[in-house]
Image (cartoon, rainbow, N blue to C red; front, side, top):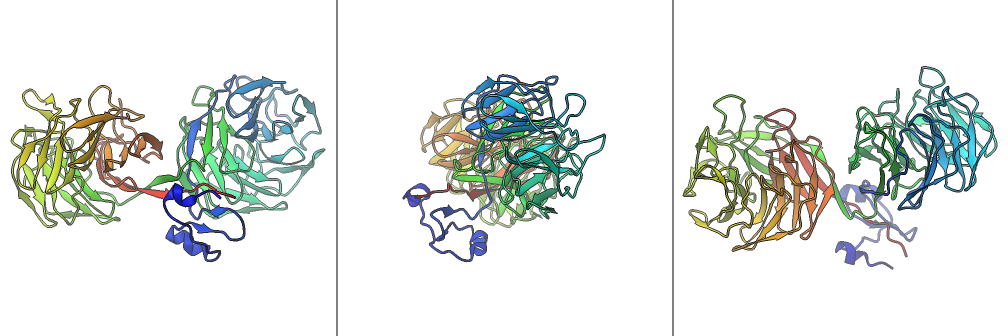
Length: 598
């Protein structure tokens, strides 16, 4: 048997009861009724890039699995082109007999089914594929467009769609020979996401269906209380009635992916390429889904593959309490449940800098004693907290650069030893008695600096210079084990590690940027938000050797505050599509474990 402890560093409770309690506690329990380790957490995962299709298209039909998928028809005009996927590349095979788009599809690469769609006009035509060619079969009861398919070639459903200008509740069942009208959906809709089988199906979203989820038991549809967080149509769906995905769609060109656990939907990792009018293979597994084609707004040929089991530690952002004073360029420190932010830019006209200080208890922000000196673009030691001493140094006081250092004792600010040279847009790491300030802009002429300064609780001394001078970078960790990332330097993806005397350049970020949030330590960090040419929501996780993209922030932003660890972080304020954001987001890394069998 696979050694679970070697993978996760902990053993598994061998208890077969009280799984609801296990879920609440976040434990991984062993199910003694089977040979599988049961994951008692909401599903997470990640998308990776697969092989491109030969023909870019939108709204085709789909069938198959991640390693054996099929795409038929679609919109580049109205095409009959069919391609199959082997897990790496697409190959064109024999065409449909009837060229069409907005069709329903399901089955496998050796036994597929294509039905309905627009030729134009709308069509009832149904075709079967035998692994080599398409054969016309019995038609749908009514010509239908923008319907979706569920099931296999000998037991399928055609759900929703248009028969005229209005959405329909249609549900038609195929027995391998003919189509028969069955119990309708509760909500008329077209362009849904689908999953499951002909006797245990699921639909989500759709034009006219919005956020609604329905499940089918082989005789009737039931509207579920769990609704999508993001209303959408023209999305892709995958999975079962108890474990499904909703991917992409409209409005716009969504990258948002949501996971369903049979009760509720939760946002997980986004697609790499946001798009609508995409399709999925029809296989009923959440562990290894596939989506392909679509519109972004040009017709797409990209393929993306979802791997649930590959991600052993994933996470998601959730909305936290809003700041009382929206701001950017503030100094921040602490943890997700005990954070502090001070100073920053809180107005669009003079005086720009603020002295306002707020602390966070994990749910709400409270205004406390002000800084002695108004300032923005300030450096802070990340390991200070809202109730213990923190250090905030340098910055810009209105339009005057400063070297002032202030210490927070949980109640008030006290001025301490100055840096000795004015620095702003610096990054900080460490604790009160062993802190580090690095980079930024320094005189003369506000040039970009490579300097590092070490603080012992009262005075500053020079530390080792970075290899590349930079400002607006992220920093975290300890004085003798720090990490610094990105910044206003070319290239912006550089990562450097500090050992207390010198810096070493290591693996780059995937997305180079400046003005980001950075939380954690030298061997486990999280870099989120920032600026490329504009604000981004990108979030990357550092494991001590390389960066991996994980779930994005909900709000793209830069010059934000940050605090916490790679497992439990908080993103604070910043600047996005508007200035002086008050929005807070909380990152929680959830356990997500492979299914490990004998």
